[in-house]
Amino acid sequence: MRVLVLTGAGVSAESGIPTFRGKDGYWRNLDPAKLATPEAFARDPKLVWEWYRERRQRIRSARPNAAHAAIAKLAQHADEFLLVTQNVDDLHARAGIAKEKMVQIHGDIFVTKCSRCDFLDTGRGGSPEPPTDRAAVPVERGRLRSIAPTSEDIVDLPYCPECDALMRPGVVWFGEQLPWKELQRVENYLDRGASDVVIVVGTTATFGYIVDWALRASPEGVRGELIEVNPEETQLSQFATQLVREPAAIAMPHLVDTILADHRTP
Ligand code: OAD
Image 1 (cartoon, rainbow, N blue to C red):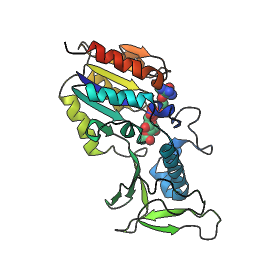
Image 2: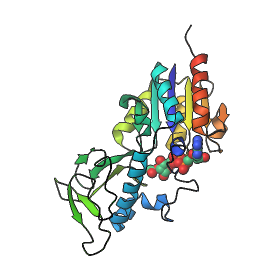
Image 3: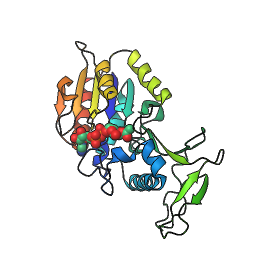
Image 4: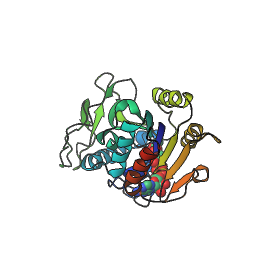
């Protein structure tokens, strides 16, 4: 049984991670779509780093939920499996999905990368418990400098140890290219033929490539199932063979057990 799972922010909602377009998505009344951009970073790197550092801390304190666990279980039992997640958190990984079975198409929030050269710090964003003291002790490797030595809330920004340029979170921002190697991994999976089951969990499917991949993996007229797990309707809903209008942590354990029972080879 070939399985493709596509996830978005909704799969982490029950772990307490805000979605992008949900009512809890704003941060300090700022729209994430306005913060996750190269322009916002160029304009105010301190603000953008504060947002990412708060998100990193919230994710460190969160735990994978039953939906993450169910997807990991499906990954173990399917003959061929790929998870493509738009999420930059590490909850799928912490639920036990092997790296080779997962594509993080929008990057990894715990990676810090140079904004100019190819230096990369995958050090999981620093110590497990970054200090709560606002005069921030840095949490990223690299040369750190205080940018407001006079202000009370000093925020250190990481600079590249190789070329001294400012470093940034290792995620894809609006208007940026998707990571080529990760894209290739998705294409290679799709090129190997249709999936028996495609499950799209917790995403508005805002980006066309998500809809494209879901439809190419379960082409019209081929026996595959295209299941959407989302309390709300999305632009993918019209193509689904099954709609599960429930929260992912409630729906996924039962859905995965049903799929495994239906596809159990005699
Ligand atoms: P959105 O915030 O756009 O959508 C979250 C989806 O999850 C919505 O369709 C909700 O109805 C659904 N949802 C909420 N709670 C849920 C739950 N408990 N169980 C299941 N579904 C639930 O987030 P994404 O679709 O992931 O990109 O957004 C896609 C991309 O747009 C993000 O990766 C980010 C954003 O801009 C970049 O940053 C490049």
